[in-house]
Image 1 (tube, helix red, strand yellow):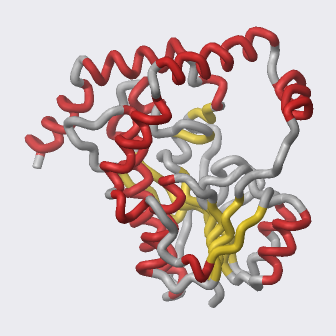
Image 2 (cartoon, one colour):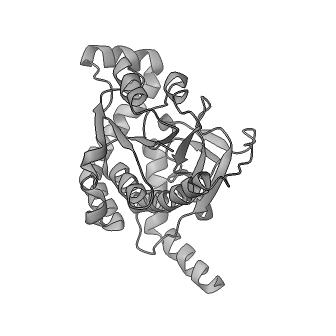
Length: 271
């Protein structure tokens, strides 16, 4: 059974790829660096996609995250959670295939040449049906949220916002054209730490999801994989646009006031 992973190249993608490669016989890792888009083309895309107020919100958010030094602080926080040895480099450089856009002819040809029986997807743009059809058995996706309750973008963030910390986790499901749709083959709750911040909470969901991914692939190889249909009328599909400065400030305030610490302590007392 030929198993191919399609992912990207940030810390979380390297972590998941390395954990899978340790436990599962992968036949290739396709790294999508994204389709190159010129600045004028990107401006036109954003103008078509968002209203003026939505664009203003996105710009405000970008400016604030720069002011908060989120890129630097977030990277350090997630690296501490993952462990630097697990996320700084891809451990199996011999398996890597680099592309610029999974849904481009280059992406299709690269995946097709690897002759996958199974596609494992994590952290890419929405993979088109043409590429998904290359999986002779099944295409799976790991989503860092508890589906169907938390679907779409930033699903380790919104449980904090909603004060539902028990809903931080991950789902492995069949990858279809529906966002985070398809049969569910497993969900898992993340184990949070008292000193976690918004960045390491995301890392905890990735870590839990990576182990779940391994377990699901092992079930698939053993011929024991069973899934359940999702009821997409339940829960919420979150969009990236919804994570604005107001929402971000609320979550950071909750964390500063001890919401994660209290949750971790309550979990310990229940054991």
